[in-house]
Image (cartoon, rainbow, N blue to C red; front, side, top):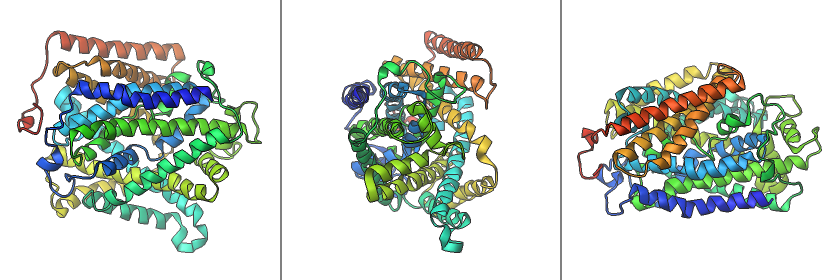
Length: 500
């Protein structure tokens, strides 16, 4: 319990101390007009209350990620505490804050355009493709997954309880959320769902302190406790726990709020603060899962074996974190927990899916330079996006989805290198993101060569290849830096509300 409490306090302290340092390093300017005023179109660019912007940003980046990822990540042991705390404070929160603030300085530009501005046109094209594919993939899976859960809950409703019906309902909502002005639908329901997710986390936090069972301490963090994983703790835990530590998906979502934030001074609570909040949620669920498993009467000599058996229903199905979420909420929170569990495993993924499709529209609009002020223009972009998603629903995602976690973290690598180049060009303290960029480069390059869905090479060989890739990236950066290759700000950034 001591390690958990210290980890919790570290996250809170990180926001106030390191978050403030990052804010000063970037140079937040409360006197600079933000895109919601300079480009107000009443659709994507519109001023919103800061508390709403925070809750929408939190739900955009969270969904079920910090819940499901943390539950599976704690199987590796209390190293999950270390990764969530250190990854969140020094990696994820910096990644989210700086990418969001750069987007504000560039009139709410989407991630591929920011990457292209800093790393060049080739990376711009790569990021456009990767981002669009990832957004459509996320939106599609987060339609079918909650539809399946809702179908299992309403199987007695006949035609109105099957998976097809619920998929149609969810897709209709997605279409509305993608097309309507952001303050008309998302701005009204997201704060409600965001508060519900926070209330659920607070209730589970109480359960962590009040319920039976024991928590592992940090002294056990340096060995792999996973009962079945063939991937070593590094890089396995860094891929398993993305939301709550470092996640590239977040940088695709931040431009939406960059277009709605009223003042740059709110950047730290919205971007850095939402990520720290997500880290706290992940930490709570990691502790809750292992403590709850320790009290279960299921097969297993250790809490980790018990948790794995509970997640797989004693081997009857694949790993399903929703089982533990449902059990913890019912056991610790009673009837209120049952409602919150539904929000956690159904509403949360839906709120990730709709913003994924909206992000896909914005990314496409940015690189096509296609205005989005009229609804027919938004329909023209959305029609092919949703058509592709509908076709993909008939594809078996069991294999493709394995690559999602790696692709997500690879996005964070591109983003962190982009921010590093940006800071170097601005002659700011770029080492703050250079170290996380190198670390995540090592994580992703090692994982793809060691994982079963990758090259499946031996551990030593994989570490050598990952290290070599990381060294090459560092050498390339040093070469660029020493030659003074600081590209001028893009020509599109000439107006007063863009970069100075």
